Amino acid sequence: MSATPASPLSRRGLLLRAAAVAAATAVLPHSQALASPAYAAEPRDYAFPKAVREGVARAEARNERLLTGTRSANGWDMETAADRGGSIATRPVPGTPVTDLQVRLGAPETVLVHLVRRFHYEIAGLQPGEAVGWTAPKGLRGPARNLASGTAVRVRPGHYPPGTKGGYFPLELAVLRDILAELDGVVRWGGDDRAVDEALFYLAAGPGDARLTAVAERLRARETTAGGGVGTLVDVHDKRRRSAAEALARRQRNAA
Image 1 (cartoon, helix red, strand yellow):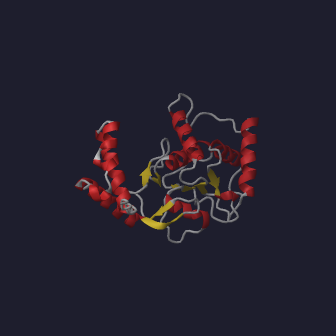
Image 2 (cartoon, rainbow, N blue to C red; image 1 turned 90 degrees about the vertical axis):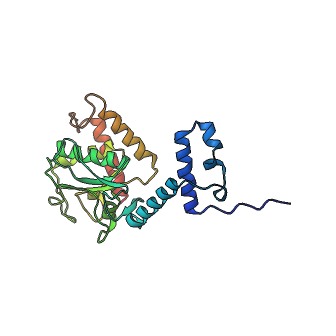
Image 3 (cartoon, rainbow, N blue to C red; image 1 turned 120 degrees about the vertical axis):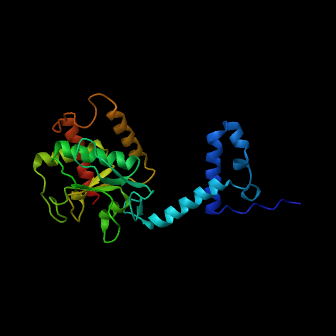
């Protein structure tokens, strides 16, 4: 007589299984964790600990409260609020007066904070409030929707109104292009879009993009190296750097 096939796991069941496995792995050696009920048993055979069930319930409630159910133009989940236990939180931009940049935690934060720091040091000194990250989704259109996922920033928006071109002097534009090239194209400038927005910078890499992870890791490593972080003198007219910046600019403009 053949065995009755196991029924598919529900999303909640998968969350519970994952949470229980994580808890078991944290306290047991690897071999014991694999043999533990959290790993081996079917959901119907194992009573998940109360703490695990409550944790999953809180996570589901948080997602229900914060996620809009849609993604921004670059593929990241948009959220209805920052600093509410979700993926978007307020972060300072070290070395600048900007102390309240709301960005998506992890690699997006590393990359966007780096961009804002270089802008402050090499293009124009920022004042409090001149770097704006997360913005409520309602009313956002096109690439600006990336703000609602915490994967974009507006820098000095009062100086570069949407739809207006030519807001940067030539040297400032050269630095801007150098910053984008340093980030290997994982950030796009709104000045290259058809609907021009020269204050807007946003991730051009979606969740799980290996390029974004690699750039963030490189930036973090550089910050721990003497003379390697933001504030170090950069020659944006160096032939190699200028060539890379111009090549990226052509690719991103052509992709508009």
